[in-house]
Length: 181
Image 1 (cartoon, helix red, strand yellow):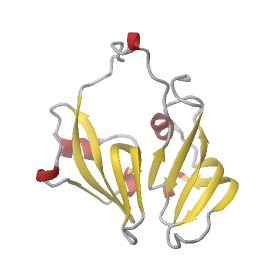
Image 2: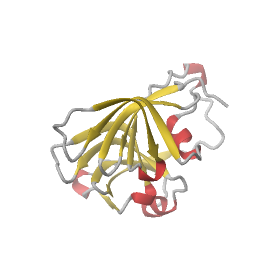
Image 3: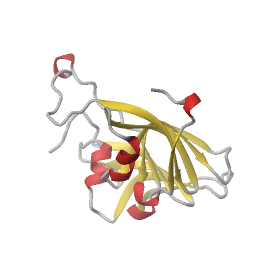
Image 4: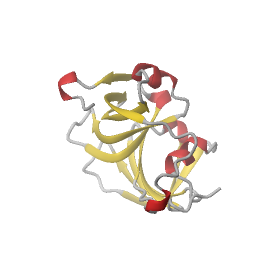
């Protein structure tokens, strides 16, 4: 079922070990994070794409009509979607599965990238347990800064970023002095 609050075509950035890809992806009106975790195709296709080399960032982008990306090679994804605002009359109509959440600032190593952002877990839940039992393949993190470890001058930011949990090597809490509660 389509949720018309979300665009049917979403601009996304996809990071693999060697490439930074930009393009448009059809989600058939579903929220991007839901689509990414529920779609079972082995590849995704970005239309009107640009392919950038991470090892040679000074090289020109390669503009292509489309690029197919193996889902297993996707390390980090930044959706640039803008959902339609929900009318105030619907703000109090939360789904029955809605749970109050708390933010926890963490670092995540998804080599060759390091992410710093916030995970959201059920209020009162143990963040360690939540990180180890999250069931989806791609986990969302908010207010994220991404650093390409081999060249720390390469930085990206995203309001929401999803990382491939199967490729994540380490999770650790941000230092206490800098943590937001």
